[in-house]
Image (cartoon, rainbow, N blue to C red):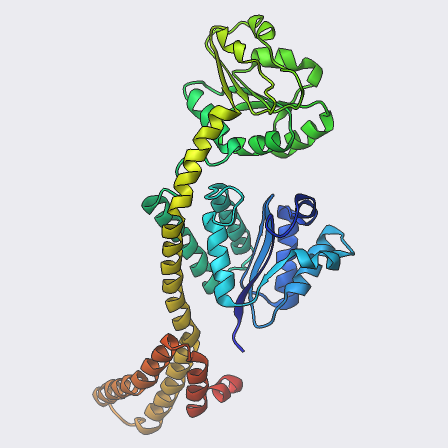
Length: 422
């Protein structure tokens, strides 16, 4: 039985955030599960992708191991009732479905934010984790490099990755453009609710920035700061931190504006101070822009940019899907040939063994010139004998009849017996 490429997926499409948080795997857990898959099931190809929106396992095996893999996740996470989460997982049992899903995920078609560029980097890290543990064989290596090549084509040939299509991405793009000439810009993030946390996680795209976070509930700010290596500021000291910051991102829920013109007037603004108000209702008074040096952007300003970007991305989807289909077809041509390659090699080895045995048997007394001539003749004969079965095997690949042809040729040339005798 041939190994099949399979996948299981728990994502924002199948599970609410409360479930995704429970199942999510960190680097250590991924490492541990990969090793168990290697030891327990002798997997040579396995990849685990875990983000805030999805936890997925891709693997090659002749059997469907989805239940066993989910149990391993439960064991790693200390979830004795993991079976109660089974319905949240989508299972891809066929090669084609699993490969297509990996491409769609990697390109950002399955992301909450269509065209999400982050997912490409996350897939690369997942692949690196597998490669480091020798859990990526020729099949997975080729598949992943095809994925990366496809991603490059989509960037070069479509507008699918153009612009920022989410509020948090747009906010980061805005901050990056305005602070471009500021050395190590100082950023204060006020409020780490859902939007604030999303913005914080996207601040990886501002590697030189000095980032501080504050929140009414300090423990939430501390948890996020520990994860992202940010500094925590007591909420009571928020005004002092604002005065020092070049950029203030406000994502705080309250009825009245939290940041007022009166507060800002007391600051010594020597160059500029950017306020990004992501709150609804707004938490920054619009009149703060009357203060010299103050720049204010709110949700409406930013969202207009995201809408334009999203429209472009949605319009590009048909072409993105065409590119994916093209590259998957090319990959399948390679995959089919790879499927018959071991049989072709075994056939070559079998015929070469026969040839060597016969040369040894009949040319014991031949001189060097005679031996070289017979050696050349028998090599040529062997190549001609090989030509027909090799052509038949490759033709069978294109007709999806490779398994039947492998079996026929193996029987005719007794290749399985040869393997057993070794």
